[in-house]
Length: 575
Image (cartoon, rainbow, N blue to C red):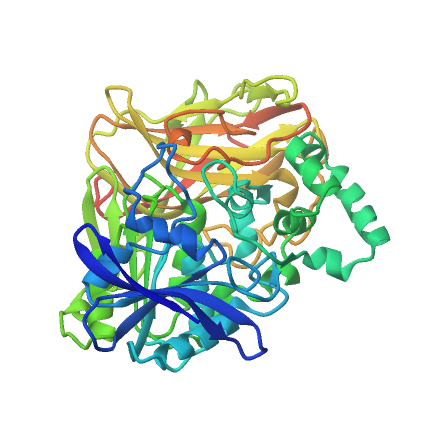
């Protein structure tokens, strides 16, 4: 039986219904806590669902919000500001997904695939909440990141009482969440296993799909095949995961599936979004390009009422998560309480432009018309709107040799810079980097980072791009300045052969002010620490190359290495 009590949160009395038991259609019971005002009467409910543990989320009542690099920052306290939700006269319902926290049932490691869909459970959960005497039948959802992704999965199931959702910082295409340009990213492991500033999943019964579907002999073969990749074999954490997978189900499956395909696409929220007809507000901050890209793709897929709000850098919001609540309450006041506050009269897309610190609005993404223009890599580390006229005999390639991190902790970086801009130059959208390169191995990584460098030497990251060389194939979605890679197979590189590698640069919005320079850096690994990395959790880096590689970067008349960037009609001297 649920425990009913009241507590005082900074002078605000809150009624708490602890350990509510919510039945699922297959007999499994999920467990939840509900927070609301002490006055009698039903209210609209905002539902938060994740496997991170409802007791962890309750710390939002007692822990002041922390920003990176605070050691108190915990990336899994993401259900929202409980006291604020109650103060706005909503019921805040925080539940544990199956196989985690106090809930029963079995959880599959990859929420996109296998087992019972979190979306189906969310349907049952939402409909149960709507029937409770403390809810007026109007339900929305709340929460960042994992909580946000579950909102999309829930909305795709069309529960009748889910009237709208407000998604902040969600992640969608799970392959693109864990392999950026084919390069493995460690942060999802941290969020699930509890590393580097994350408490991780409060798992009680988690199942590896790979272990369920393959015999021990097949698994042994797949593990050894994966360990044949020198990048994987050189990284101790991955060797441990593959050799000792027990209690590592979540990451074990991802490591064994390094290519995109059915395993990731089974419940891709972007694919499912075509089933969503309720209003959807999407919010994401710059500096997290991998999730910004997916958020924009999701926005373009949705058919019903929708908003896209792209906020400012830096990349990581507070934990406990408290940002964006003002916008969220305006959204839900309209759709759940029927308050005509003008939210639908505002533009569909709002983008914060770094540099000018201006908010640009429009009816679509990008919110302004853009023209893709090239900035060419030139000799003497220059970037120029003019292509290189000299042939390879005169414009000899730049190059760098990178030893693996088992040998050195020094990351070699090449950089090229524009001259100082003479006027405000605005860019909004995704971009591309065409890199003509020769390597002496059958694979490497290309890591590109683009910076805004101020006259005083300070700089801010604008966007990034990643590409595993063996994943260089492009697919039919590719257009000028907007490349896509299928990542469905790896094609080894022929050592000594010059290849054109096209990196996708994650969407961004930035104005380069007079006197500022655009600097692009190229390496095959990320530096261990710099201005950007210090803002991220310790595990937010990519798998380094595990072999020594010599790279030659050609930028001559026959090999026009270049950036293709989205200049708005206001940028580069245009109105």
